[in-house]
Length: 394
Ligand SMILES: Cc1cc2nc3c(=O)[nH]c(=O)nc-3n(C[C@H](O)[C@H](O)[C@H](O)COP(=O)(O)OP(=O)(O)OC[C@H]3O[C@@H](n4cnc5c(N)ncnc54)[C@H](O)[C@@H]3O)c2cc1C
Image (cartoon, rainbow, N blue to C red; front, side):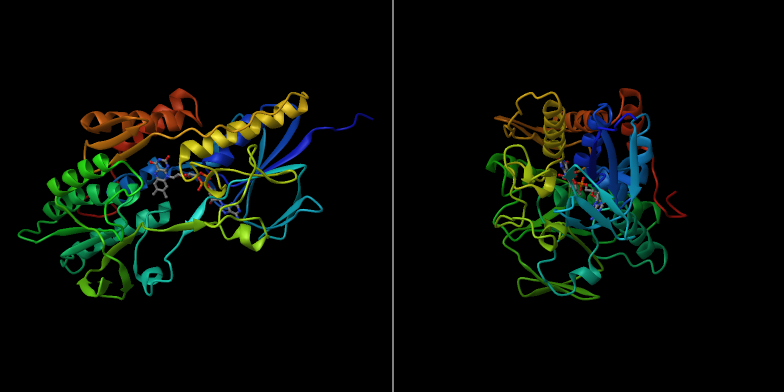
């Protein structure tokens, strides 16, 4: 009888890292690949801000079955809760046990409110399609039901996510106020940051260009302002209360609790310590946002980690020497309202319409990283679909 010598590869997490690894490895005859993810779809986070402000949910979500069409991958929709490192198995929330020879973990990060009272209950978020849709419905409901839009729409966190959302909100809110025939309404869009400047991890000149742009489109930046609490009517910031029913938290994420629960070796930021091959422990590989690597936290990093680990799995089956990771600084592209983005690409810094074009190209390339060109083009063009979830605006 012929012996099955294909290695069982289990990949957990249907995001950038997990999907890319599953696509590469499943095309190789040496592996049987299983992808386990707790959601049926892949989330394209960079466009969630647009989904929340009148864009379609299609632009930030692609079904895993669609992404894996043509790839011999077994997809299991379940949450992995525990790993038995001795017996090389994982267990899901439905008590299904899956055996692996090698496993790749790419679970992404989770929201962190740093224990600030009320935020988990009252703030909105844009870390998932459900959150983006909830925010969109809320923006319209306040206009339809009581005709009382907020005077202050508040975004907390002047990192890339906060900036792209605040910039777009400025255009979107003015647009829907007009459609709802609400005139003479004083509208403030406040972007709150605890650090002394926006984009604290980026070059000062980019920070300054984005600051000027936000001021021009009506976003007020409050730096050195620490959020202390939120209740049903107010946000407390540096001792002052601001009345608002629309507070969006974009200021904090933390590593997936799975790793602490399963006793992985974590660094001081809670990320999993890995070697230059992304191996955390024997036969266990951790990539993307979860790994304590130099540029962890970006989609491009998750993709390049997945490519390296997959190539090394293939090289190992051919007895070829393994390739070490050489960290490559990702390109940062931050949109701030319609047709404007700041780009930092090595030493090159571009702001304005050209930056926006680069952002559009980056989205197309990112889709093509996971799909053939024709599908990537169709996915990219979903940006032009409008979806307001509002009887007046739709
Ligand atoms: C709003 C926003 C905007 C962003 N914009 C950009 C950008 O413009 N450019 C950029 O480079 N990066 C951006 N990022 C960061 C980028 O999206 C992440 O770095 C990237 O998604 C990380 O990929 P990953 O594979 O590590 O994790 P993810 O893509 O987060 O995927 C993790 C997957 O694992 C699943 N999962 C989690 N826990 C379990 C479990 N226990 N069992 C099974 N499945 C599980 C999740 O549901 C998810 O499908 C943005 C992030 C956010 C939130």
